[in-house]
Image (cartoon, rainbow, N blue to C red; front, side):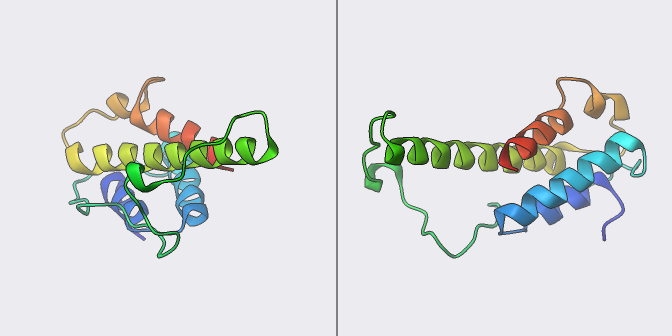
Length: 128
């Protein structure tokens, strides 16, 4: 396992399965918060985060129209859309950390209440 925050962020970005991505995120945010992981480090993120082979990614114009929110199918579609939003938020936060982290960056920059670490932790909780 990588020994710095930026490298672990890249590990998560390379993880295709959402449940595993969430598990790794929860573990990494806890290690960072508890001080078990202290080094920020540097890493090169992939061009795109990994995704499972299925379902196929389609452009928004090729997606079926959303149903009304009042039906059971509409509520399921809404929850599905929210899961996609949170998964993208997780990937975006780890990409920012991996792309812009540097050893000289103060640890406090990543530990404030409005930091990427806090945001990715909250997004991972919503995915559970």
